[in-house]
Amino acid sequence: MSTKNNNNEGKPFLNEELSVYECKTLEVAPKMNETNKNCVPPAAAVPGIIVLMAIAVVVTLLLVKLLWAWTIPDLFPGAVEQGLIAKNLSWLSAFKLALFLGVIIGIARGKNGQ
Image 1: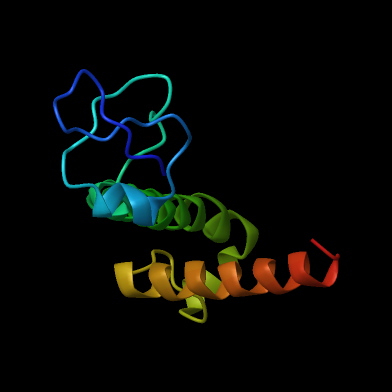
Image 2: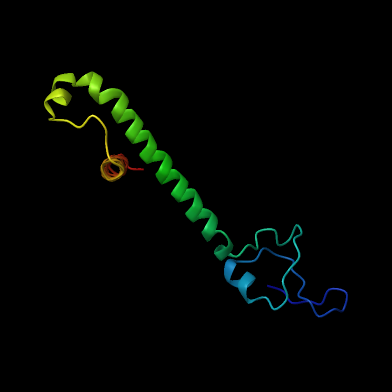
């Protein structure tokens, strides 16, 4: 990082891309321009990532519940009538099933060399 004065104001002159560490240690907040557009603190992205993850979990659970209720009674009507298989899943059961499938898919992707 270069600290040349820009217009004699004592502000750092940014003539190269900054790492995240350098962005945090600047004394003066840099303005967005072509040289420092990647200077975004990672802490600003954390709430957005958490919200996106929560939305993904809710959508996944909803899909698991809807697909279960749509397919299982048609595929196994006798087992559903006898009570061997649940006609509808609870939210906890949908979460467990989604977690199990996620682990299985993750293992399968890892074995393919990806």
